[in-house]
Image 1 (cartoon, rainbow, N blue to C red):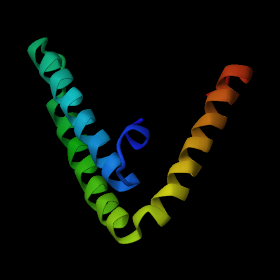
Image 2: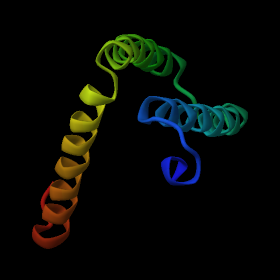
Image 3: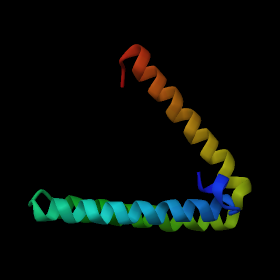
Length: 93
């Protein structure tokens, strides 16, 4: 929706979406920490993996630009759509 409301390119819109995602995740993490439901070893391992993936993904996005990101994004969305339709109609995972 950011692309329709504001004249920004796909890379900047993706960055804005990630920023909002970070804030919501930080709030959720604080709620789970407060209720004592956090496994810190697994969480830190997953956090490190996400940071490494984000670093390499950001480098790829900067080097490739929208010409690279758009086809990857469309492919992922189509793949997820097919998967969800398959799960809905055939009940499989």
